[in-house]
Figure 1 (cartoon, rainbow, N blue to C red):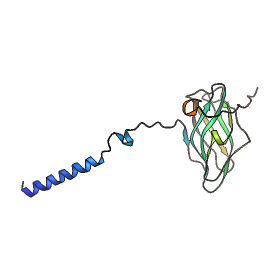
Figure 2 (spheres, helix red, strand yellow; figure 1 turned 90 degrees about the vertical axis):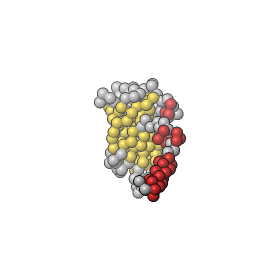
Figure 3 (spheres, rainbow, N blue to C red; figure 1 turned 45 degrees about the horizontal axis):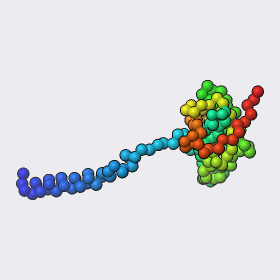
Figure 4 (cartoon, one colour; figure 1 turned 90 degrees about the horizontal axis):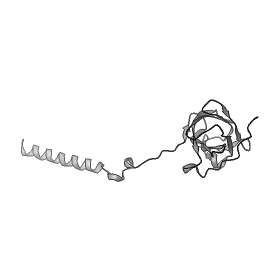
Length: 168
């Protein structure tokens, strides 16, 4: 190997070492941090999307919906009904207090804060999944499975309205 070839190989090796060393960010890199994903489920595909949706229950037979509703950018909509089916396929009573939940164009509506959606949760248990169908005034319906969460930890401050009266 000639002296110029050895110099070129040495320079290339040094450049490669510097490049590889600059890629390292150490122990503070985002990929080394613990990430706790939210428990809620996103239901997309309709004009209104459900973000981080979950059913929060208090253990005394009452529940509510948590998560966000985002409507289309150019038009307002409203949530007009919610149907919940428990893990056995039985319908669960749901009541939207006030009849509907307005969704301004392009804005986020937090169901647990901006709406009062009461669920008779006597057949629901934390950790289960429930099938939930959302119906809107303008946009098409969206549905999916939502996880049922106990009113603790992240969900301890969620206010749960009095459940609807169960049919006799």
